[in-house]
Image (cartoon, rainbow, N blue to C red):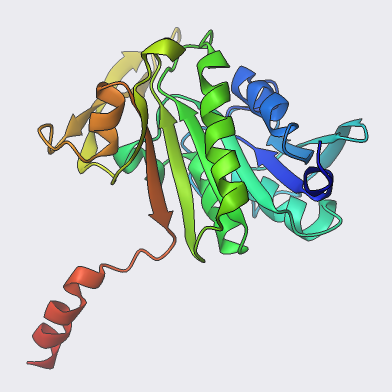
Length: 260
């Protein structure tokens, strides 16, 4: 390990919980790049987006500490984990924030709901180079070994280049054998939405409850420059994500409309 790697401080988190296989795989790879501090939620926080804990106290427990790794668990959300780490747990601002490896893709509008990408965006808000990694496999027995070389490739590139202020990376990896991955494709977020359908059910006491189901509807299935196309065609998708959600393309039209 080089002197630079010895000096590099890397903050890791996820939204699948402390004992998720994706987090273990990510930690093992990221230890090749520097000192790792893991701050993860106690349980799955999938779909929590950038939620913050405001009604109960946050508690943190140190689980492990070595020369190369420090591991905490907290009772908050992924965004809480980043805030706690940067404000209280780390000796200095980290060089990188890396989140994942998420169980399931965070392509297209899923980036809006994902706790993993919320943590990535939170790191970006602190001015830290931040990347979220996801594997397009929702199975609890998903094989994350296919992600390792992809992560190495992306992070080696970030040792050569800094991300612009306010921009982080959303990296999604197809769930196919490693030798079938065609490459990495820098692309845009696909336009689409989740068609959410609630299934009405009865519990053992006869009380009605609703279970969220649904499917993703791709609005542009023929487009070849999107993250959804990349994943469907054997590529790793890399989408630059901006924290600025202003619809810049509509500013002029809106101003003209209000001025009249």
